Length: 236
View 1 (cartoon, rainbow, N blue to C red):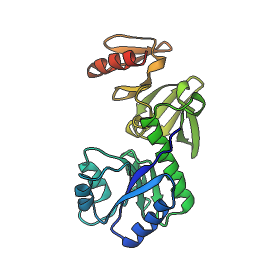
View 2: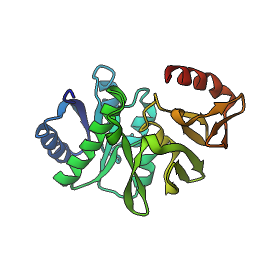
View 3: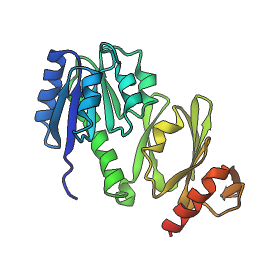
View 4: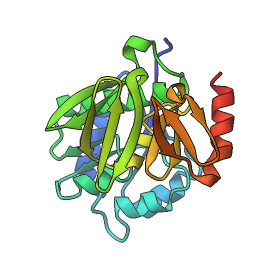
């Protein structure tokens, strides 16, 4: 497999914090530093001409926060939040964050976060890995649980929670649908309704209102029907 090199930017209003992250980036064989910014406005303008795969992003900055920056970016790269406050952790994952690093950053946590980013990049750009490696980790009951994607039937939104329905069992996690939508390979999974993401390989039949997986009827949004037909055709 070809080696992955992620082009990185660091955004932090503290020059000392930027320096510490820059050093970690330069010491990592799969990362390449392409830009440093000390505020969100400078970042927004800089990214118009600079292509990045991953941003190490501070949250609390003058004028515009890290969240404000992401709200203004039309094309969002992968994000690893780096902040001195833990109170933003849940909100961070509403922005599909790869990880949330608390200052001061340990090398171990940094390497773990980067590993997640590399795996996500490969998943999106190199297709699905071999079946034995085709999985995601889901935090359930304070533990990271491995979910093999070929065993996952569908995901259902339940308010502030998400229900995973697999061939083996079902379980619920505190998370958003959006946080998982971008982690799942788009050639295998499709969001067919605001409350459902389904495994295309598990669909047994469908009509204009529902799809069926293992005799379970799942609603199909009217405006998602054409997407479903195209996805199923491409998946044959």
